[in-house]
Each structure stands twice: as structure tokens, then as C-alpha cells.
Image (tube, rainbow, N blue to C red; front, side, top):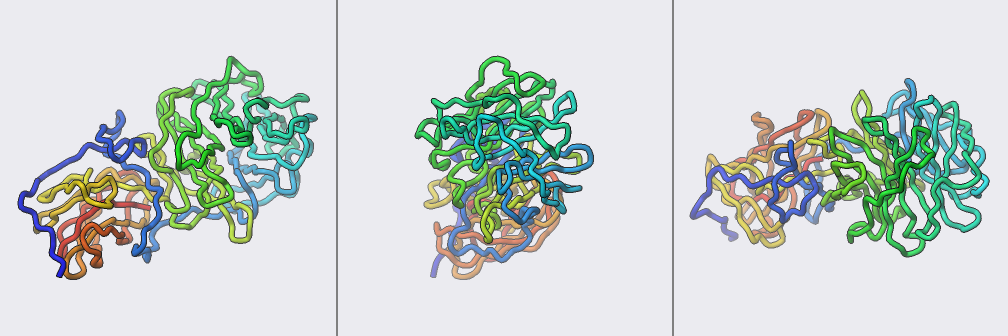
Length: 470
């Protein structure tokens, strides 16, 4: 018989300092960022063997364009949403829709029928279209530099968002051949009207360091003002040496830089973000990726090439993912901001249980195999509970709650579940043995914004490692 872990000394009302939202390592005891409350680290880990994945409450990203449409760039011009993509039979494929969630109509014309004189067809990638103050539409595009064989960035203009766009000048706009060339341009206009061009030097092409650059430009988007600033580089093992597809948005006074990492042809490809109080940095990367194949429970493979759509009807993250039929389709997911940090509906967010508010139970350290090596233990009494607050979701609706647990009792254990003070049934934990961690899953209904989930004493005994919500 496997015996329960009974407490000899219970610690009541324990509260542990919160993590900054996805920015600090799980071993850090630093306080949350200014203006924040308890905030979670982002989960990019797979569901482990023995998980109960039967719950279907999680609302996954929607495949809104089921065709090859990589590196989507989406904007609203007038009453219509426009999407542009990496070349697929055309230099600039495009589509339109009355709503970000569709229906999307793929357009038959090539919005960029002719490339700049410096470029040759075949590798026209990652477009970005924005509207200038003069009413004209500015396109940044990556193309094959004929003279060097590298990729470089060009610009084009049109009087209509559907084109045709006409190339500007006879040379690339950005083409640092000694650094491998340049790819993945995007535009950003700050709250004071200052315009910036963001891009990546293609160091991966020559085995050199890759940097994300921020370049101030004039209102025309093509006249540089000063020099570019290097703000982010490929310096983490989980990036597999590759970062790309930078996009910046501003939430309050904080700049949020989304980027993709890893080889795009595989399910290692994912989306992460970094934040800064200044457009030119320094930026701090999130500890765990915002979206991975695993954080989406395999619903989307290789989620990347993301663009942020700030919209009156609700913000969205638009990105590509692998299709079973081949190519990369365009997906859309609800996007929210937890004190300025992004949350994507359907992608798991991890909350360490030991950072919750504990009542008549305590934290056990040095828990072998547990996330951060700490768990909530001794939830042994009628009034024992752990409240995990500051659970943020973008929209009201059904979500999947995943609890990392270990059960060394003689039989199945359980905890009662309450959401925002209202009883929501219970969650069961099959026997695993102590320090053998598995996940149990339950459907819950959460409200848009902040939520608190309480796990209380049920049957038998179990320890809690973390909660994940998607």
C-alpha cells in the first residue's frame, strides 16, 4: 500500500512572490512587474505520458485560410481585412475578409506583379503592408537579390491595398550582404506618429549571428533617420539558432516584440515575445514560448510567422501552421493582454501552484521531477485549499484546466474545484505514486480577464505541482 504524505506542521495562509508574466525563470522569486499582480510563466511543454486529454473545452486557433499562405500579414483598411503572404505562384498572394475570423476570399491577382530591378522571382517572402499618412499603401517585401544570391528587403507603393504595387527605386531598401542579407520586414507606427522599420539580418544563411533591428524612418517609410539598432538576437537553446518574423506592438507604455524561432519546416517552430519600455530596447524575452505545437496540444503544428491585429472587435494573433495537405495555412486566435503581456486563447499558460494563496497546507521543496522543484502538499484537511489567482483569459467561455499532480494514495484521489468563488465540481487523480507527476484535465468556464481557481480537499491525498489553462 502506498501511504499518503501527512503534515506534521502545516503552514496557513502562505503566499509566494509572483513571477513576472512569462519573463523570469521559474527559480526566480522576483516580484511581478510594475502594475502587475501574480502572473504566470508561459508553458511550452508537451503533455506528458499518462495525461488525461479527454477534455475538449479549449478553443483552439481557427484555420481560416486552408491553403498554402505562409507568413501572413493582416491589416484592416476601411471596412475590409486584407491578408498578404509569402509567394505561392505569385509574388504577393492576398486575400480579403469582412472579419478576421472569415470567411476569407483568396484573390486571383498578383498584388506585386513586378519586382524591383535588383530582384529575381522565386523567393519573395514575408510581406508587410501599411497605410502611410499620405493615404498611399506601403509594401515591404523580401526578395532574391540577383547579384549576390542573398535575400534583401525592398519597398513598393500602391494607391490601393489590393495593388498593383510598384517597386520603389532600383536597389534594395535593406541589403547588408556582409551580415547574410535581410529578411522579414515589418512596420510600426508609435503613439507619437514616429514610424519604424523592423527587420532581421539573415545571419542563418552564412552561419553568423542573427539580430532583430529597429530602424527609424520618415513618414514615407523609406527614408532612414539615423542608424538601425540591434535589439534581439538568437541566443537561446530553444530557438535552435533561429529567430525571425519580428512584429512590434505597443500596450500601454510597453513595447511587445513578437518573433518566431526554430526551423520553420518542423514542429520545433514556435512563437515567442520580448518586452521593453523603449522601442529600441533592451528587450527581455519571455521565459517560455507564447505558442508551440505542444502548448496547443498539437492542434497547430509549427505555429509561427505571426502578426498582431489590434482591432476594435477584439485583438487577434494571425499566424501560419502546417497543413496535413502540405504547405502552411493561416490561423487566427483570440489575443488578450494580462497587464501588458500577451495571452493567446488555446495555448497553455502555466501557473505554479506554490505561488498561489495556501490555506492549511504548505509548500514542499526539493520535489523530484516537479516544475521548479516545488509543489503544494499536505492538502489533508477539510479547510485545506490553494487559490491560484490572476488567471487571465482573453474571452469568456470554456477552457481546459490541466493540473499537474502526484497521487501516492491507495486509490484515486480528488480535489474540489471552485472558479471565482463558485463551486465547479471536482477533479480526479489516478494513482501515480509520490513524485511521479502526471496531469488531470477538467473543463471550466472562465470570464474574460482575471480569474481565481481554488482546489480544495477532496478524497484521499494528492500533491499539486502546477495548473495550466488553455
